Image 1 (cartoon, rainbow, N blue to C red):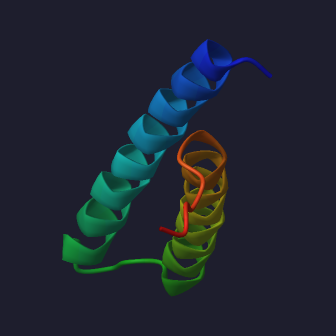
Image 2: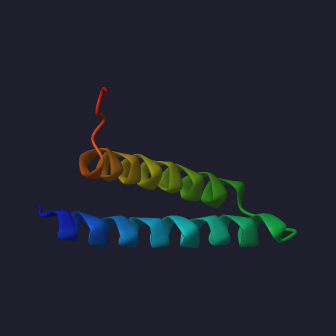
Image 3: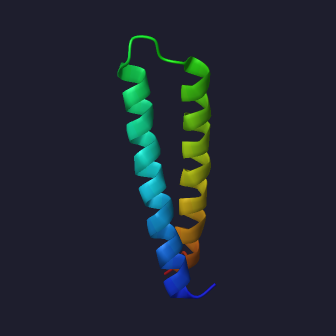
Length: 65
């Protein structure tokens, strides 16, 4: 993938991560929240975070000075 494609993918993943965070908060704030659904959303959010970190590492490699 080109750098521009990686940047676009990164934006999409970050947006989805924020959306999941909002969904988790909304489900948690309801009185009869479904714990299994919340756990699935949190797991998905963690996978997204890992994907975001991988793309960021690709775009900004560690340079030892």
